[in-house]
Image 1 (tube, helix red, strand yellow):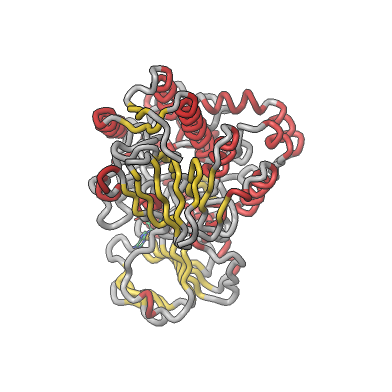
Image 2: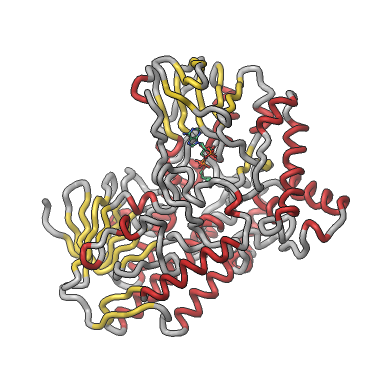
Length: 538
Ligand code: NA7
């Protein structure tokens, strides 16, 4: 072990959340170490380098609002930014705020244990370093632990295999190859059109079809960018006061899909389809609450698929039957059109799953589909995966993973009872992935910063939620989810994409209500939290 290091805070992860947390803690005059597994900053935008990787939130909104200079100095070039552009943005922010000197790269946190006597955490890394800290802040991301399904024969396959979330830094050249893509979520929907342009053949293995709405991506007009920048503070403020943290410039729907006639409904869907993007689900205010309303949006997209895909049987197989929006919708560029290409084939797994990988291909229902490379676009152990992969021990040696065996338990998605001074940024039980992540991250970072500042000012050693507050919060999150249609299909929101993971809806719908609740809790002296007195020994 190297010499012990002693800091005020350890932050795990150097993506959007970790970078802003570091900057905020520095602003309080605290010492902080960020531990990052990648060789650079960026988090999800460091790892997801697959072809076509883009954010599904418009770039002008998917950027920090906390620093006016950064907002002024950075200029986005496309409506939906590519992964390289977002990574450059985060590198620019890190450089601009001189963040990297407090970040340890190429290093993973393997364990963290609370030292109750000292009210400190002892963090251990895979470089055998031990760091003692007062606060431990998980900025580990909601979609960062790759889900690699346990399919027989993976090691028998003779060619290369890739996971979209662990894409090689130098890229991959598929020219002349037969490429199998497993999965049809967002990563597959974004990458398949580009892989199909390059590869000799693409074979898509689809377990559940996805709903995709067109991105209508385009270069941003510099005049438009300047106009938005000039109005940024108001734009951001509006976005922060919506249910999703974005779309602040779009009028919120005031009516339900069933409250208007067929003609008006179609007009609205046509308008939103033409505008493109996730705002399609905001066409009406009841789409995620009323099954018959949801059916109208689902029918509309299925009609579009039938219009785009030439082969009616293929269009039928690509058409989802589930509730639209209960899995995260995809935003695509030419996804359905790609199936009109001669070199793209769909293998439907709904009746029979992949049996195994052989030396030369993928076997389904006794047929081996020959291929040269396999892309696992199989998603992530979302929300809890990255936290669970660290051995986190709270009071009495309690393992967080054990505490969460039946599903994550948190208060406000920020803290866990028996784990004092452990914070999660966009943790389970908070709106997180149902929002514009940057807005949700900023709200969490600022809330955590404020409570840490209070603790320093008032010489408080620990903060931890009361067991009752946590239980009530978990019940509340479940009750809110029950009001929606999110339970209407299998999804990573529910953890059902990972075998053995408990089926629990992990994020909380409704950013604005949530933000107000966090503010009320703080204003009421951090209601539901218990503070321990006296600063820890240093
Ligand atoms: P997703 O959305 O979780 O998609 C993963 C896909 O992989 C999905 O179609 C899965 O089918 C499929 N999958 C997973 N395991 C298997 C196995 N064993 N066999 C066949 N198919 C499988 O992950 P993405 O990376 O695309 O997107 C994640 C988020 O990142 C996205 O929502 C955006 O927010 C950005 P299933 O649907 O489970 O039947």
